[in-house]
Image 1 (cartoon, helix red, strand yellow):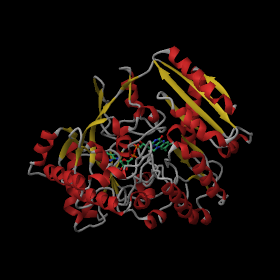
Image 2: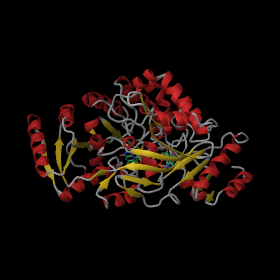
Image 3: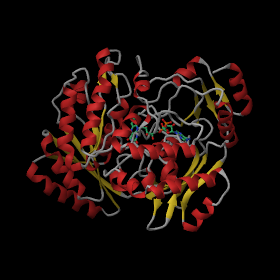
Image 4: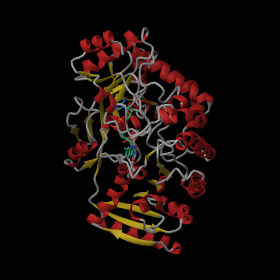
Length: 521
Ligand SMILES: Cc1cc2nc3c(=O)[nH]c(=O)nc-3n(C[C@H](O)[C@H](O)[C@H](O)COP(=O)(O)OP(=O)(O)OC[C@H]3O[C@@H](n4cnc5c(N)ncnc54)[C@H](O)[C@@H]3O)c2cc1C
């Protein structure tokens, strides 16, 4: 960035602007496959700073077309959502006050780490049930803006269900609050002669004019973080209109989050975990069906052996399923475990009840299996690019078999599978030598084959991790031209100067993404 511009930026804010080599390298990465060097990292100190940065970008965009702003909380995004080649606006340093808890609502800033957030909520016997597996390293800003999900999502739903109010700075450099509105409140908003009024009028019209197509576009799978969730905004029957639904999961492409009200749920007093060891994948769909019968179950599909044997060389089960039962009533749990065991009996799986510490260990392994993958294992590293697809549980066997067949054609990709079998969400994260040209060439080839398959089975390309650089180019195939044009219109309404997080959610660029795959780790 030109030095005058940088000095200008430093003048308009109280927070820090860093451009030293080490900081730029740190912020060139998130947990994705990519590496993009930014021009400057800004740590806004307060709301006025955020507004000033956005006004600065607007003012200077015309003479500096590549100027853009990418928000970042903890920077653990797996899709390349929190990296870019212009200015990174980092919230973890100054936007991390402890959440305020009022009844069952926690008001949080974006830079609050989930682990700290949870400490506060547990003090009130409450929990946010959509925390991701990255719970120890991610922050609330990323959770809201990725529409994150995790081990409890099958039972409780995802982040989108729990965000009740949002305070954000939009592209005109002003702060606005969004929450669910009734008909009269919506009309009042639409009558405003301000940018806010314009947004309400235009988004209302966009949704109303295309209502049936938008409703039909909603992915018919248990979880989705792909695209803008236009279908969740306007409930014609109840006459409610809620723009938080559009902001959640938008990866900072529509504005910057300053604060969110998050609904919490009571923690259950008792929990028990049934571990199911499978040596044969052919029973997966049947098991998923049985698990689907339980409202109170989360199930995690843990490993394929390639990963474990990398460490141990042992012949372990092909799959370890963790089925978590929680309730305030011990008897209810016991009954559910017994019923599930009886239902699974014809399949003859080996099962075990994990208690107390053992149970914790299993969850830890499940969560840490991901985290471990961030680190270098021998000469290999993780390449998340087909890491988060969702299909209907009844198609699991068919689809996963075909996907593993695709990967088997490329032995340079050692793959691992984890996920949530109950809701058909899979995390396949190959281990690769990123310097190998064969690996670099085959990433887009494998991605295309896998996403073609997901399209064929009417799945979603991402259940939790979001689109980012890696998946935005595949949104067109998932949603079709018309819906993509509505996504682009949505972006245009919120961000007419295109200052926020380019190439994410709309106007994806596969060549740009592929040319920014990391050279090494
Ligand atoms: C080991 C590991 C396991 C993971 N497991 C899961 C999982 O189970 N489920 C899941 O959903 N994800 C998972 N992820 C991905 C990621 O950790 C989560 O999506 C997490 O919620 C991101 O939080 P963050 O604070 O690190 O976000 P960041 O990387 O900082 O940002 C994520 C996105 O949100 C935007 N953003 C951040 N702050 C703001 C703001 N203030 N305003 C506007 N936009 C903003 C960014 O621009 C970016 O697009 C995992 C990642 C790793 C490395």
